[in-house]
Image 1 (tube, rainbow over the protein chains, first blue to last red):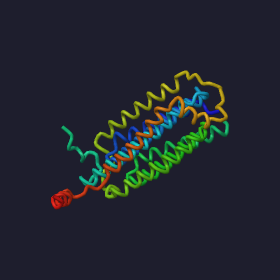
Image 2 (cartoon, rainbow over the protein chains, first blue to last red):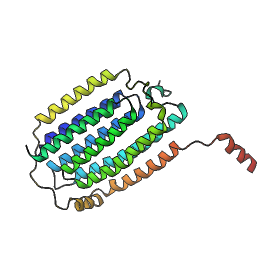
Image 3 (cartoon, helix red, strand yellow):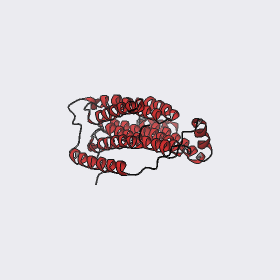
Image 4 (tube, each protein chain N blue to C red):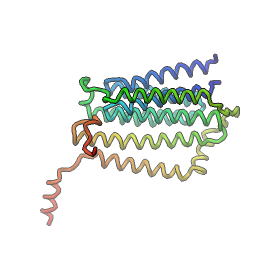
Length: 102
Length: 177
């Protein structure tokens, strides 16, 4: 049997790698990919907690399903925004899209 | 060390390696391909955790839909694939410090916490139970999720649609009058 903490460690590392991608990338698509990594790490946590702590109650799996659904919606809207910005401003570098910055 | 643990360690090393590749790769297209690999490996974790339905959903939605969407977006904005563009912003070292601190705190908590692990086995008909839970206890979030997907679909179409030239539409209206 694999200890629960192994899954949590892997998920924590994946989450922080994704966070670094979100914070440090300049390309908007790269930032979205970082967000996907973070959401996946959360899903690993949810399912690991379901399996090891409450295997009779399926709440963890249900929430993981909802996270996947919202991630799909977020990715489609985010990529549509990026394509729209690229069409208008010829860039996907987030630092160049600062017209709403004070 | 059991077979399961060896499989887990192999998957873990591959997952972390491909995730690092996603973040540090200069070419955004390689990042997308490594992201596909990473998502596949996460599906492997779900199989190890005895959640086969979630593994199938992961492969269908993440690998099948989201990854293809990301690759499409990269193709439509292909100028960014050039290697002269700097990959990281000026604050990358602050981001690195924050991330390393966060991972240290999280690992400390995970290792020292006393998890109340249950010995119960997973229900034999977990997929049936999952369907029943979705349509009884969580029926309202389930329906809201469908509305969210519809909104995302319409929103993505409207946002990404090519704008019609304004002048042409106005002239047509004037002719009609």
